[in-house]
Image 1 (cartoon, rainbow, N blue to C red):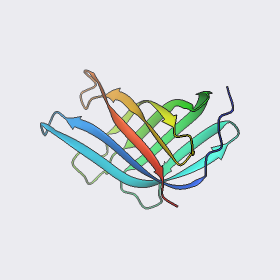
Image 2 (cartoon, rainbow, N blue to C red):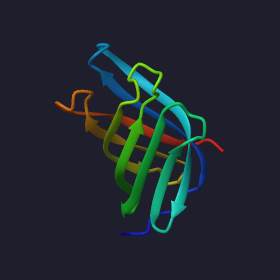
Image 3 (spheres, rainbow, N blue to C red):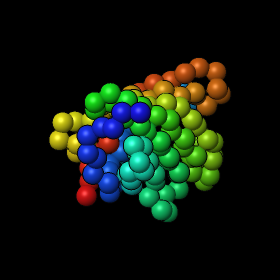
Image 4 (cartoon, helix red, strand yellow):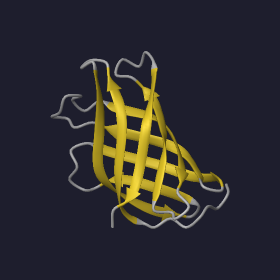
Length: 125
């Protein structure tokens, strides 16, 4: 594993876009998350109290490229009724280490096809 540029641990703003086939809409999920460093790895977690639990494990691969996996357990009382989704994510860290842009992949609700969309993380504080 390659050690990457310095990342700033703390609160980051996460925004990802996904297609909802059951609603026939393009939707955006926005939330603040915590980003922490563990060795050469990066952990991203939903803030405590979030009804939907997002977890991501990332590692630097080449220079500013981060690659990893994500899991989201949706809000048990929400539209997706506690379904757990899993997938992969690839980000490119900005030169100032204060934001990263990328794409995610993951199965759809019926686990019948692979979906993809954009994902950004930006240092909030």
